Image 1 (cartoon, rainbow, N blue to C red):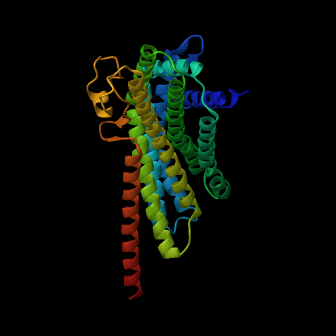
Image 2 (cartoon, helix red, strand yellow):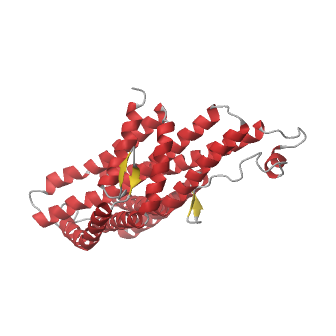
Image 3 (cartoon, rainbow, N blue to C red):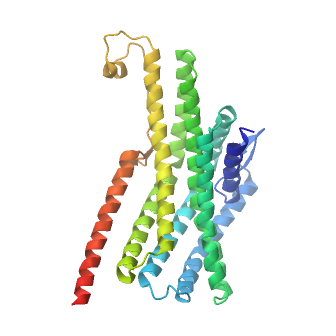
Length: 361
């Protein structure tokens, strides 16, 4: 029973990836991940269909906002359409990239599945995984009240477009949950390596296998992580602008925008935190390998890491979640995003107050 919750969570993520064509291949425990022509063809047809329907869906969604109670808020309408366009673009890019690199993705999934059979998530990681899954479900269900309220006065074409839009938008959320689950699995393997006490040669061998799998994980998903981070952050800034504009003009708090900003910030921080913990725990494992090795007592920590006597005394490389060579997912990058967002809020408030002064005069 202790293995049931997190196994269901990871298996559910794999099933969702296959359902949304993020994993365009079949998988079984005996045969592993295998690419099949029929699944590839169906994934390509689905991607082409969604790409062709994307302009029509956005056009109908724009007409739908004109028929609802947000027609008086031009800022909200423009930001909602811009965020929707960005989500559709990110989802289509993720689906297309996974179709193109399906064989490499299948090999990576086979390695993660083998790791999952040997290592299990702890209760804390299991709880975090299920909380993130429930948060994504809540984000999806937030569209239901709007459909219920507007269903009686909107034509069926606009309702159909808005019904397809959550499906396309949910692709990026499911993708982020899959990345988060994979990072938790890598963290569980690191915890097991730190807790056990094998011989140094065996520990180094297991660490190399883990580092090889983690490097493959980062290399395969770095484009998707880049799109997720940029998409989440831009949407947060845009909705913060709408929030401040509504607060200054209407002197109220828009709950819809507040909920979206909170959910997007939590999704982004969970992704960065998991990547940061993977890098920190791997650095601790490297230090433990140094402590287990035989070295002269006169060497300090820096000399132990830089000038070892034998090439196999310490791991030869360290894990870095470098995304396209542009930035590294760690706490310093999160602080940079927070500081940029705070500066953005200050600028918005300054211009809003200046506009209020001019309107008063």
